Length: 273
Image (cartoon, rainbow, N blue to C red; front, side, top):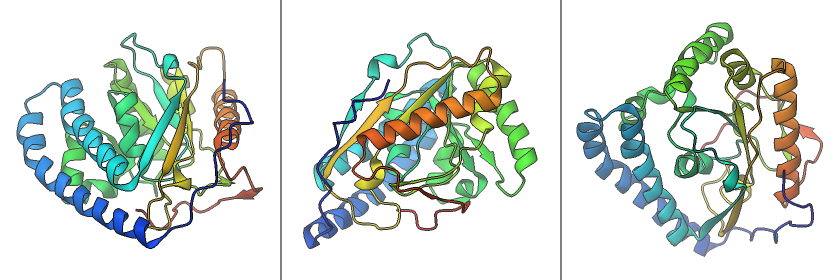
């Protein structure tokens, strides 16, 4: 279950020159980490089995990035519901709120091994795209929804069968704090078709790592992990609605900016930092 409603945090501080300097330094370190980790990731990771490769390529890299963000930008985190994370070796469908890039770096730390459903354009990014391809994510063409859904179910089923979690952002894009976007049913359908259970993730990362600005704000990002949500006996629509309700209401409980009533309809959130 989600946290109590009285646990809102203090409002994040407005960006200052100090925040800008710290954020600029963080990006320089991020570039350095990416460049230095690229070669050992590729030349060692390619010889490792997929689960070990997942940790070698993404697990270590993401830990370095999160440590840098914590030390340089003052971005810490608090995880609630960590006892809900299974350790039975099965693959689970991970359905997460999406507000910023922060969660893509953080979730490999606590929910591993997992692969993401990502747009195919990321494959063509120098260094990052090459490393990402090593862990066999599910690349999709978002302009071809029908074929993309089949691809998610087919390839996602293979990953789940091998004990690898599949991470889906059901909003499909980053949604600013205080707003919502209707959840797509792809992740729930993957769980429904394969019989896999779901773990939902709520957080308020966008209040400290905004998608529309490069400056990071110091503070503690709250992450809440749901109990395991079984897919058996539920339709795709029922499962999707259950997860959407849990994530939205939990995000409201832990956020400084509860839902304003504004819905996002765009397929892309524009800026990405």
